[in-house]
Image 1 (cartoon, protein in one colour):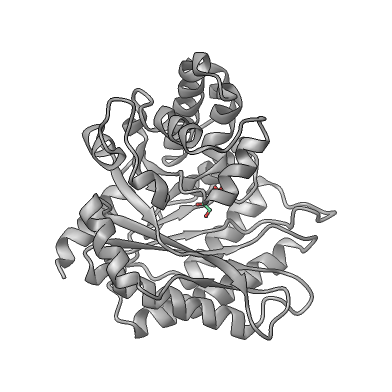
Image 2: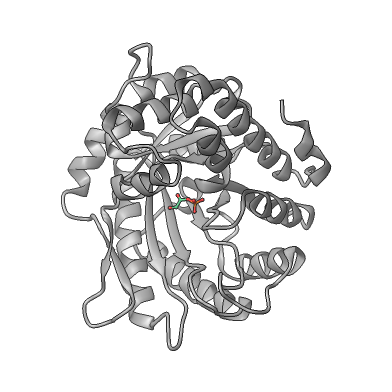
Amino acid sequence: MDTETLRATARDLVATGKGILAADESSGTIKKRFDSIGVESTQDNRRAYRDLLFTTPGLADHVSGVILFDETIRQDAHDGTPFPQQLVAAGMIPGIKVDTGAKPLAGYPGETITEGLDGLRERLSEYRELGARFAKWRATIFCGADLPTVWAIRANAHAMARYAALCQEAAIVPIVEPEVLMDGDHSIDACQDATQRTLLALYTELTDARVDLPGSLLKVNMVLSGADASARADHHQVAEATVRCLTADVPDDVPGIVFLSGGQSDRDATIHLNEMNTMGPHPWELSFSYGRALQAPALTAWGGDPANVQAAQRALAHRARMNGLARDGAYSEDLESSAA
Ligand code: 13P
């Protein structure tokens, strides 16, 4: 394993002012996104949409890397260049989602286990040939009465550690993504407790699996009130609870923590990230790996119409710039009106 190259790639993904674009929606998830704008989820439409995202002028100013789905890593940009090569030429690092999804956890109603370890060594080797330099594996953790259970947390943490070790063997930087979901009416304290227990288990398993932490990244939820909670924590409370949780449980030699947006509005995701960065310095970079919070305005602006490609690209470039500023605590809501 070339540890230095892995560590350098991990650092590049959280370079100053930059974060990751998550564009790795599975076939089911992208269909949901397309349904919301009345566009049919065909292979051509998915290719056209990802093409407009990845060829956005200036995207690399604030986006270090892009997470792709299996279908997309095999597709070409409009000029015939395979997407991974197109991204590299534009100054971005190609990544790949390698888990095969969260399935019901036997014996534990309401909880899931993420699958995808079988054949992973071979798949990683192919993805590296196709250009992937980092990967992602997402586990979903549920908050609720007596949830999450110790077993669901341990089983998911164990699978993530095995995934991460296989990635490093294949010279691919693993992003481990435990997501405590916003679904439900739980309090911010319940989210904090679940996130803390999950991170503790995860870093125990990663260490036992001999994963080189400086050659890995953490992708995690912010500590938030449940989507249906009656009393909602404000921006400052979210930032404080999240930083407290990470400080307690994420080792200092992890180079970066990249947040998922998880159903927050695009502006909330930016404000929270900004607030956390004003509380620094932190031992790790605090950055973004947003899907919806980067793409939502672009998806709406596009609406499936080729005539709207430039408007959609402007919308994506704007959100990337706002989040790039939030990386340094330099964002303010006044800047939202400065969209090109
Ligand atoms: P969201 O930012 O839309 O939560 O997506 C990030 C992601 O990659 C979820 O796995």
